[in-house]
Length: 276
Image (cartoon, rainbow, N blue to C red; front, top):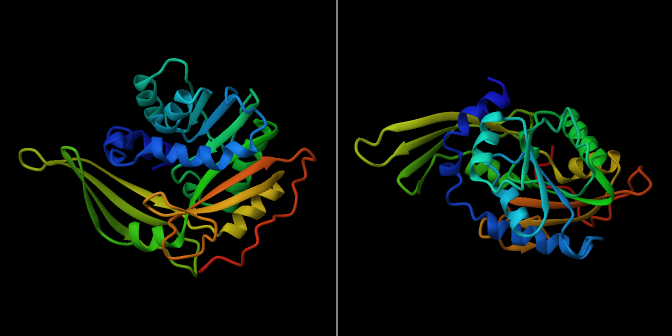
């Protein structure tokens, strides 16, 4: 199946799968990291939510006063997003690897594993180049990247969590390896706890590991200046020194370079553990 068809199917239970995720708290963290670097202090510019899914982050942006355009390659996800509202958010079917935004955004986000779903460095470069084209000069681009910890534990071990009337079971089908560029793939089963505990949906999801050095290189090659990389653990605690076992996500903040050539990274860290 294609990624779009996978997510079309997943859209039926996506809000259940994400029920325990606090997007408002996550948005607060992102805003905290980005606010000091915005040229538009009033925060009423255009925000572009890339890989918007069912609009969980887009709604947070709209609530904060942004004009929002959300794009996704899954029509099923977008249909669910439109039903959630508000009508002020514009949702569009688009693949960031293939197209950019006609309007120029002040701020672009690609949150919740968007980058890790890309299967190749070429896809990442294409996506970053299209984000660059869709931003105003000095526009900010913010996204997350899963660390080795996510691949070894969250995607490498069987887990069962309760989400309202449902149970979500995640079972690894193929595991991350530091030696080869192959996806970590999991089978996700959503089970209705009521009655006979019926499986209401099953899908598979694959993600790829990328080192922070590689991502930084792709950003610079695409015309961005790296502003910061911050580590975050599963409780939402932030770490400036992000290479420790607690960190599960890296939060990147980059700025569209005025020279259109990008600049050298100022990140004062060594290579990631188990970097490819």
